[in-house]
Amino acid sequence: MRIGILTGGGDCPGLNAVIRAVVRKGSVDHGDEFVGFLDAWDGVREKRFIELTVGTMRGMLPKGGTIIGTRRGSPYDHADGPQRVREVCDELGLDGFVVIGGNGSLSVAAKLHAEIGLPVVGVPKTIDNDVEGTDVCFGFHTAVQTATDAIDRLHTTAESHDRVIVVEVMGRDTGWIATYAGIAGGATAILIPERPFDIDAVIEVVTRRHSRGRYASIVVVAEGAMPLEGTMPAPTYSLDPFGRPRLGGISSAVAEALAERTGFDTRVVQIGHVQRGGTPSAFDRVLCTRLGVAATEALHDGVTGQMVAVRNDQIVRTPLTGVIGKTRFVDLSIYDNVASVFFG
Ligand code: F6P
Image 1 (cartoon, rainbow, N blue to C red):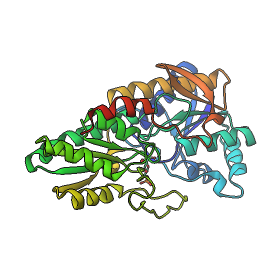
Image 2: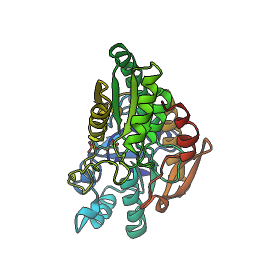
Image 3: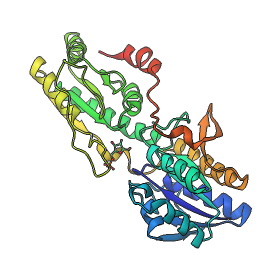
Image 4: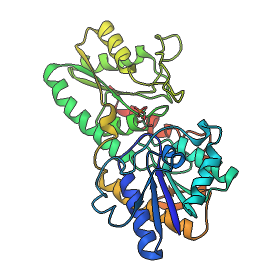
């Protein structure tokens, strides 16, 4: 087969590891050839690509980012976009396609499969862990470890200065990273979009802890967290070129309210893109390798319009259409029954 590959959306640790596995499985077992489109769908429209071989991918297992670049945006942003994808695939003689992406890229892949018959298999990625249909997305585990390492370090400085540190982590509309890094890092409180927060309750938790003589607190806030209506002003965000709110800054509002109402010395830390960069964890490397091999196997089984995913630690195939318009939110039993036990 001749197979096109692209990485779409925000980068995350493990993209190269997936590409390496797709290419290795296809080249060695089937004699496949691979075309890596540069900068996601832009590279398809503009016919910019590199040939990917076992040699090209040598040394890429631990390398963060993506060797073929990534962008947001979709062929549907252009009137002739889908038709152009079809033309380029025909011109390059592609009979398979692997899209490695999050909700946006996988939804586009589903549409292209339905509308122009793109023979595509998806691989779910994102540090946000919010793709429906899989138990976990690669990149999430690494991001949680990075955030946890940061929280560990913040504990020691917070304790030395008797400070409250409000730590903001990524996750868009979900609190996966916040919940997991908050549990792993022993947070005093965790604020997530799935549970709009009452600032009075947060203040109460921190004050209670301080009244017991524990002066340092780490409050973990997901970037998409929102206050309960009427409790404090909700943050407003400008939109990026793709119409998505540019999240970031809720931690400052929380810290300001905490400092003002408690008098505690308070600092804010936004971990930001550090969570997306760098080498994937061992867990993610294995997951990426399993998913990459499974994507190639699916194409050789003639299965398209599907995503390879994880269910109960097994790799499964599930229709790409199941991703469209969906967000996989935090399992609230973990937040309510586990994380919150340690608040305060
Ligand atoms: O979707 C991944 C993510 O890292 C989110 O957690 C974050 O809100 C967003 O991307 C930031 O994207 P960028 O800075 O690349 O526009």
